[in-house]
Length: 203
Length: 197
Length: 201
Image 1 (cartoon, each protein chain N blue to C red):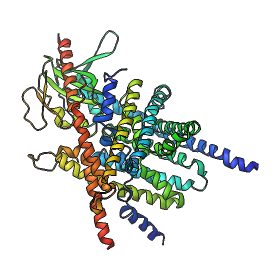
Image 2 (cartoon, rainbow over the protein chains, first blue to last red):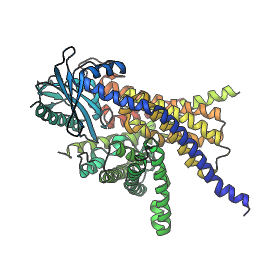
Image 3 (spheres, each protein chain N blue to C red):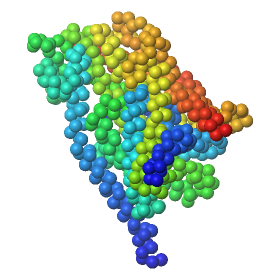
Image 4 (cartoon, each protein chain N blue to C red):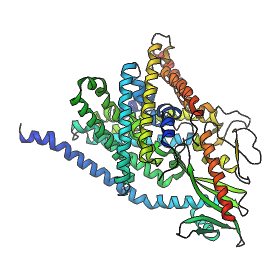
């Protein structure tokens, strides 16, 4: 076998693969590096928006506005080790604490659900919930992130119970999502557990 | 690290209530192409189950100990695909050496597996859901068994259907999809079965 | 001459050679998100982008690419473009990206992209391959979008998140759940195959 043959059959494919890999990995790395900060600030903004939403404050459209309101009205309460325990949210003009918001996690059908849950100062009435992160089935359990589902929590007391999607919901009842009873139940449990926590904080 | 979901719940949910084929439609291409005969379906189903269980563990390790520490998580698609392809290639070589009969029954399906989206799907799902190693293994195994179960059942039904008269436009892919739809309905009936508390 | 060729490629991919109807290829990754139109549109846009660019790249390399590692190189190219789609979505459309979850990554294993690269890009010049990529991507997209419109409309009474049907409309939950997609796709294939047979006569 000639030397050229060996090169063509053995070395060239490996070399070619190597070069292609390097080229494409560098391209993706460049794009990733360029958008890394945007992704990170998206995530930070998202968590601030969730806290405002859970406290019942209308979330402004622009990121700057959100940062401003957050800076003025939200106070992070840390435990001894410096971890954030919960958030105190002040009223619009007064310095009084109007709401507290807890960020909590719990198992969903497929993975962890992270939610921000807000209460009034009594720690009993829910001022709002926002799903920060979830991996439920898109279009089914994933609908826990939809507005109609989240909005129905406002003003209700724990312990919550579930009814069907198009059934009339009573004072402390939540409409479950059809076809996603497990995800709905997961949220119910997360909120009920957070309520116990909130009452502990108030005390 | 534990997110409180027990591994047997994941295992059974992956087989029945959230069958990767019937609820996520992953692996449809080979499902439609190969489900004509029970025997070939068994071969392919078994191969998929083995590869799925093994690659979910391998990819979990690669993700946790290589990609995350090096901050290369965004390259995961490439890494997962390469690991799957390499693993399939390795298995093929081993089977070829060890047993001719096994190679004849299983080996021919292996090249098909690399492009089976269900396998990559399992790997991506397990990463996004932050499973532990044990959970990932049972998720991979369960999904593989679930996929095999669906394709074998489908092949059985299609064999029976061979003599049935199907409207012309519906023959082939159309009727297979309708059967898959009915199977998905039947599998939904399992959803009350698993109570995780 | 060149224009007619472009036109032919385009029409064939959208019509009789449509990958979904002709071979039932590549429905895996996207069918799952067809219960909401918005997600479907984003997925399809990602797919058109990936198919077109990977076709272009594979075609540009076709004369130097060693045959034995062809599949590996193609997979690598496709995976890179999908990573780009994923990063862009996460940076600029975080809400959609969160909802789609792992499905963006699954574009890699979509058989259409690989299929077009193998069947078309390896034998045709880059420009034409690019057009073919866009056309087959679009041909695939319109089928899925049609399915998504019907599923969202019947299953949730909305289109693109807006309420379209009257308030007392009872949602057909089965449509947003898994079996709905199977039935819809089967009916679509039935209609298309039935009508194309009549044309031939």
